[in-house]
Length: 414
Image (cartoon, rainbow, N blue to C red; front, side):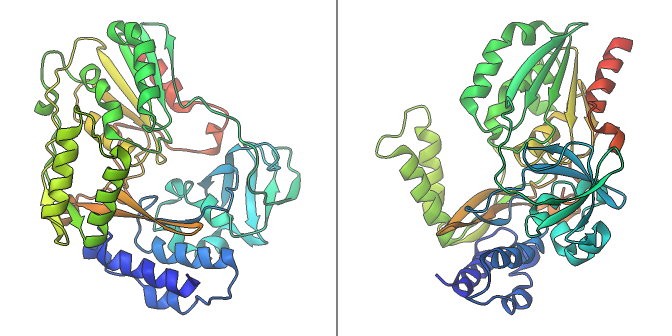
């Protein structure tokens, strides 16, 4: 397909198949269509499409990427007129604490003005997750190091990253257990973590759950935590309050794609334990085929009961925690045992249940469900799930774990 053909197909998907269409329609496609030519640079084509999709103001659940383009290999936070490096792969020429003052000779405010649509109206503190995808279209950075020296650093892509353990636990004094979830993707690994720390989970007095930067995954992966995070002897559904239904977009494309996905995943033999669920999904897809948005109540059973231990649960989160991470923090916020610490989550579950379309090496991601709380002014976009204890980010946080230190201090003092 040519670039123009790909863009035309993306516009059609956003207008008919994406669950964003009641709020945004096809977006400002005329504006960006004029910028696309079939002989333009590949990276510039990706840049224009990303700018177009950024107008829908849905981080991660609406995206377009070139799968051959490597990432920049570092993370940043915005503070005033600088980008502070908070993490970096080796060979990037950057280390945590470095200050990026210019990009291709332009100051951060100048780049912000140029790329304002890609920053989606987020506040400075919530822009950090968006800047790496902007910087990838530029070439060099002006960096101020801690010793005051200034250096121009060539942007490198595909640098070697250090492997982080996605899921782990450790214990502290005062009967405190710490659990870390980088995401909720690997159900088997998460189940193993629960098995490995079951004794500590069952007996701890204080439980700390760290979901900072949690990239989401499957809600079912965190369900075993419900019994530990809610009051003893009472069903979770007494507390978790899902007020508004979710609307699913049963467009022809979405239905066909989901039917193919289910059949390719299970083949001809669906396991007995999941067969009722799979059969219902297939039945719903066939009966609602091509009918567009249909509201459905969440009937996920939350009839498990809470328990005595732990007595207190602390959840540490931030603006990088999204999708199933959003859902986890929001569900736990209903519990009187839980205190949420840090900064509000990414807030991207207004539009969820993403579908993917491949255009050779390009990949489009778009949502197929829409939370109707948007219609009541209670959407999470640009706000996220609120916290009980807000700890703002500033450069002094680099190299320290300010949020965890706060929680451990509270536990020690009580």
